Image 1 (spheres, rainbow, N blue to C red):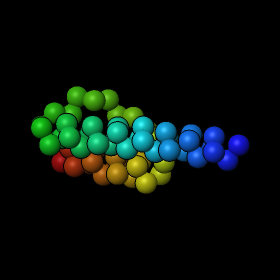
Image 2 (cartoon, rainbow, N blue to C red):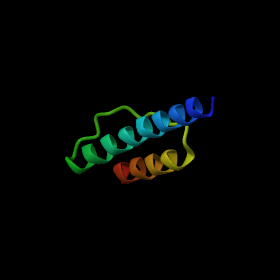
Image 3 (cartoon, rainbow, N blue to C red):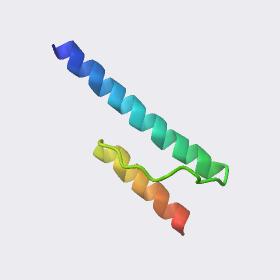
Length: 57
C-alpha cells in the first residue's frame, strides 16, 4: 500500500517537473505558446507563476 502511494507521488512530481521544464525551455527559445496550466505541487506552482511573470514583463 505504501509503495503505491510513493509511486503515485513520484509520477505526480515527474509530470509537474516536466511541465515546468518545458515552459522554461520554451521561454529560453523565445516561445511561450504553451497554455498556462496549474499544478498540484505548491513549489512548482510558485515556479510557474514566477516564470509567467517574467514573460509578461
